[in-house]
Length: 191
Image 1: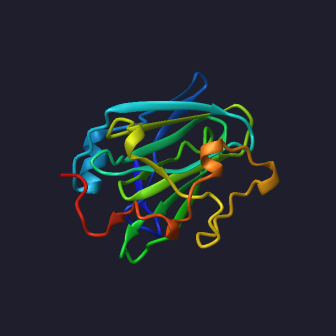
Image 2 (image 1 turned 60 degrees about the horizontal axis):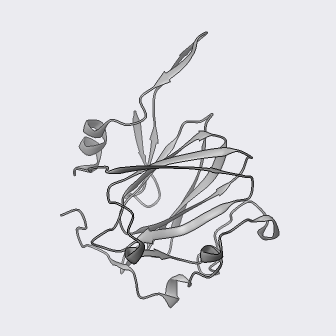
């Protein structure tokens, strides 16, 4: 596995080694020891999630507040998405900036989104299957979101806005500056 720091160093692209031949391919999609060695801290993933979506579905931008904050390790099993992580740590030098990475079943890239980031993705191909690990269970009381179309974030979702398919919840999220439910930069949310 190769670990690549992004423009926001806490967000990491993971490129697994793919071994292929006439039978197909094999790849390790997760190795706790290698990931923890790279990060310098332990992650205990507790739940796996999977969704199947059509072209144009946008899910996000979501996060959970402490003590139920989540680290996510996301990947695409079938299809293609644009995956986005937004820094929502007050006083961070990259507050309000985001990382966007295309994840696909072809490129096999994964994205590690740490606690303190909002996460979302838009589906770029029909019948896309998206999977992710989290290190804290889902908690409805801690669940929060940021508006996908927040003008201050200026995220290019690639799919034209009129073709996006969103849940009612995601249509009503506040902008980043309208919410007080944020993280503090410099706080260790892993202890």
